[in-house]
Length: 378
Image 1 (cartoon, rainbow, N blue to C red):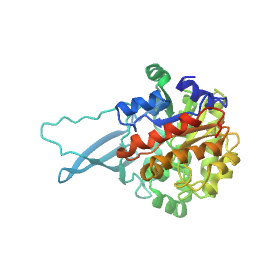
Image 2: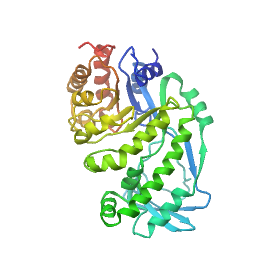
Image 3: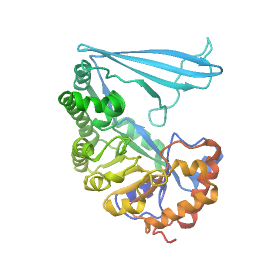
Image 4: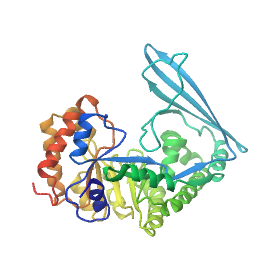
């Protein structure tokens, strides 16, 4: 099997020739080691592809940049203002910059829709007070969608068998509130102080996302990805059952009718959610992070999620601190715990220290070379 066929086999609950090994395409440094690992089976995952684009014809968006310099480094502070007939909201983001801009520098943003990994700190969320509910509802109600099917087909042809493209749908409705619009503290205060208004906004965002999923289900993409950052630290079981499960199940049903596969990025502590997740109709728990970073073992997860694919995130703390021998042993023990290895993919979905990247992933490659054949025997 080639790398894409191997992933496709697991995604459709079939037997691969070897355990798939993946990494987000924006992570590995280009060069000889990257090519060596790819030749040995490492599959790059393009997780940012916008299969459906959203436009807001009745909204004006302006962006103001400010550099705060500290020696030869600094921060790029970006203020975005969203003006609508219902009012205005704004958000502030910050990026670390590694070099001071010069007067003659051109403003450029490198990368593409599918491989750019540009993450910012949100230092001011759009929702600040009760009057912002009306503005945010207007934004999510009054939008247009544009399908991106042609670009997906073109990109998929370029990537070929060397990687796999996820159709990125954005976060689920409650995660939009929690991470993007309000921040965790403000979100839970609003649940207590303005439960009806928060639930109404949640429902507006739900309908917005549902319209996107209906279009994604008709697309040429197979794997539909929701980049939630699920953890019990911010999502207790009762909230998960009320705000997440109905959305996951309805979107899964929409996708399944068209033969699509739903993956949810769940990279946090999941111990108290394990049984509820098992009852959902999602197909893949993606970025599942076992101990020592997560609090749920692979053995426990496999027992609870018999019909689901577990696509792990190799714990970053192991990659950052362990020796090559310990990383190889960790990988071998992981393979033992999932033997024969059905419905299982090894992935890397978070940043890791560049200085140890070749040693760390060389150790994973060594373990897979010895014991990665399906069915696993170690």
